[in-house]
Image (cartoon, rainbow, N blue to C red; front, side, top):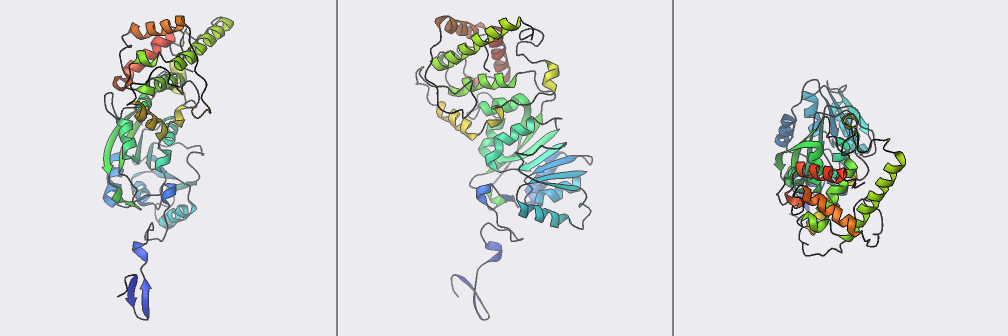
Length: 382
């Protein structure tokens, strides 16, 4: 028998079919470059549906349904499934699978890029997503209003572990802090790479995300600006981080601008009045959406944090890309803050014993208190 095929009547047939690389039994070729990894294990599919806690009255948003293995199980449990799919071949396969079944009228397919479309109302989100949109999609969901009950999402395992990491964990990062500010997160199960077709290079994990409703009365752009500074060198003390020339220089610019605006408005906009230390009322927080910058958090930020965690011997000349939009272009030259402002920042840090604390060990309450301390003295990060 030839090593390149199977011997049949009339000659040798080349091997094809079930073992064809990157194809399923419907003959659809999956593109790894587009993050197409179809969950094939029915036991894992069933486990995800069970952990979703679906009700018969729920509207489910499914992102990246692929060939519909998970979709069909969701249709059995929910009132309606809205599937957002970019690939027209997958759209046709979904339509084929429900055609002539009782589920045909329960499935709505949106043929679009999920990052570019306005999402409809839904109660629960279930998604096996391309890993390259993990961060922006997560924060797009968390900014969705009205808030949904829960999202059950398949992530790359390492990314999932960063989402759920707590203060003191090696994977604790800016991503952890920002996600947990806006939601409760729980790791549900780890899924090996061989449960997918074609298999990805890494294992995956399923995470449950429950938005905090209402969200905390925090100015999110300010919050992320401060957290970005703190995690620039997460294992250095805050006193060392906030002695860096560029950081202090930009902070002082914001401080002076805030004083000028406050003076010109004569306090009419209530920056430090009824709105509280963070400049956001509880009513505003009910409908708040994420500002530019927070939804741009991605694995590049995570890698920056990884690199920074071992650089505790770097002196105060480090450039910090903070108080600017991500990818804002070339770095600015080092600035120099006044001695008076440096002393002011140190007093703020010492007020509640933050000077010797490190971001890697700080809780959500710690960061909230630190932001309140800065804002109380007119120091802002946005």
